[in-house]
Length: 446
Image 1 (cartoon, rainbow, N blue to C red):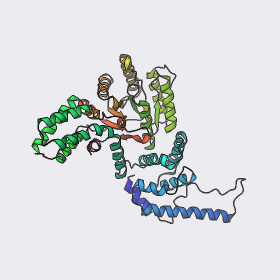
Image 2 (image 1 turned 30 degrees about the horizontal axis):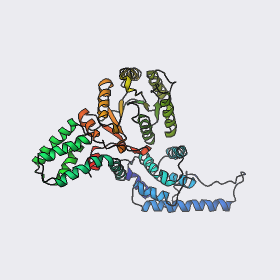
Image 3 (image 1 turned 60 degrees about the vertical axis):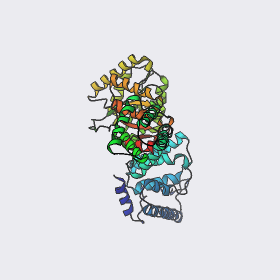
Image 4 (image 1 turned 135 degrees about the vertical axis):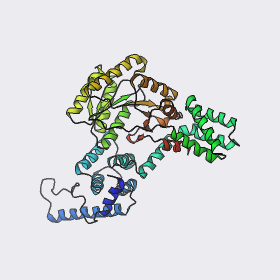
């Protein structure tokens, strides 16, 4: 259901309607099992109805944005507790979320708070809003787009320092767009790890547009620059939804953040209503299996593993069988990343793909490579290696917030023609976000 459809339904609710009739209600019995006197029960029921009516009125009068609604829900609540859970149930009920889904959402969030040892609202407010946006299908609405842009802009701060600030300095001291200007621009781009080939393509295209449009101002140049950057990113192809379960093969060398990326993708999927299973196909490292199991428990997904040293293809095969038997509709299969034995690794990955395709024709349906942005041009080399040997469908770029080499995003997109579907901007679950070329270009050059 779309955001404004939900808003309309909320606004149409009668203030006096008992919208939380299925939400947790005050206990009607004493500790010993005795029923409370009718007067006590009636007083508590009246108090519950009173706060519900006041909160509903506040939500109806609020600007129809998730962040504003959450402000109203959290008003006066400083810590996690029964008051918070009652208010969350009330919000979800007011938005006509099915009771079973609301319970799953609240219980999942309570478990996450316990695992993370969070208690104060200021510690988890942002994560709560992120989860609500996914669960209510509001991630594409203006409120969440604004939050993503702010996070993206902040995450690109080191790259902006290396690229955007130097471009601004170049523009401020240049009296035109002569040969010296373009040479210095090339140097800036290469220093930001855009790469020589991509830099040449970008500068040639910019020169042509500056001439054609007779651009003479710094503002005009930056506008063209932003447009050119945005056009460099290939869009993710439309895919036919496969016969369940959908199989996603996760690739990447050790140390790129593959384990946490799998957890974050599975978390997103679960919040969006899918039932994901994580399979520990990196059997080379016992620690990899243990870490992945911890993350699966933390995000509330299914998990399948065999012992350390087991055949990874067997893990994938049996995980697919488990998914079918237990009605999982999405399977993330982790794989090893010991690049120093790349010949053996690539043969192992090819075997996994053959076994999956035999057991479930058309699978794996997506092969995702996780790449560490801090490695700069090495990220492009790794991408080429995996693409040439086992094939790739998309890229997830991690640790973008920790590098001044964010220009590698451009190199991967232009040189390899692969869509970047998600970017990592931090440690939290909410810090893995869908990639959008226009937002990236604007955040980089603003």
